[in-house]
Length: 399
Ligand SMILES: Cc1ncc(COP(=O)(O)O)c(C=O)c1O
Figure (cartoon, rainbow, N blue to C red):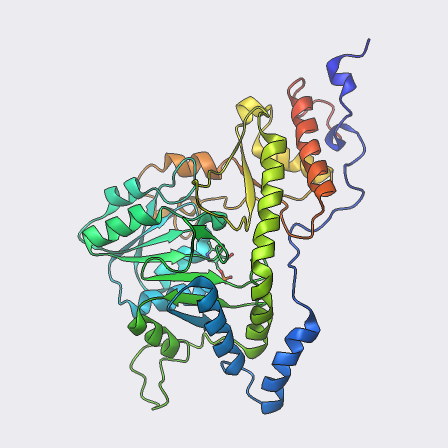
């Protein structure tokens, strides 16, 4: 009689056939028809005004309408947008930021000569933990920068209350969150400003680009000037700006990407549901919690792998999946407090950040991935778990 182990078809790591004959892309942006984009860009091209002009203005207006934001300012990237917003708000001293984020969030703080104070994340939502933020507020704190991780809206209410109570600015790094909703309201309406990324891994793609959404007219005006060296045309800048303009072609891409966003969010939520349904109950696997009533874009979908229950570590699972031709990412490992540029700011224990960042594994998620591919990824993870539950990861591994 065949043992249970023998009845499980060997994963590729142990000599079986890979789940996919070839490696497929981890990310593949769904872009609008090029003809439509070119139609708008052609007007800019023919007029010889190819940066920061009519397409940018229309894109800003339509984005503001989508987000329900008073103002949107197009910039060259989310990183430049965050940097300019912090400068325009004249922040000083310390800025509280989650350690579990992409380093660009913190780069913007350091480019302003400010000190990042690293806060822990919540163990379930993986967003910045307001209780830890409050513990870290000092007389030198001027702002909180929160991140909507993977598009999962941060705890806006608690953070807004803290900012109000302690007279701090509140900025959201909304790089992942164009299309997210907090209790039915689009992300883009919260804090002093929310800053989006339009790079190709996001749902709204402009090639490169960013958007600053704000209800603060003075802030919008300042960022609008600061993306253009701070100059208002007088050649006597009142603000220390940069060249952080958005090009017309990028804006045209964004304009025609806007109508695609809701469908993308819908499809990504479908895929996320397939992953959750397919992997729930697998030993050691848990998921990011999206609070009831909120909508995540699922810019990324990550599982949390507790190696002691799963049977192998997150890194070993990633290795075994790669042998199946399934690429994964570790968004975002290492966390800031373990990176060369930020280690010096590692001042307090960040147990939840370590718990999440050390064990998180991002699986492929984009609109054009068919259900059959998702089902096959789920099946591969299950098969690997079934195998490592009965033998060590190293045993007879395919070299
Ligand atoms: C959380 C976060 N913030 C900021 C950025 C930077 O965005 P950009 O490449 O548009 O500057 C990214 C990029 O993916 C990000 O993930």
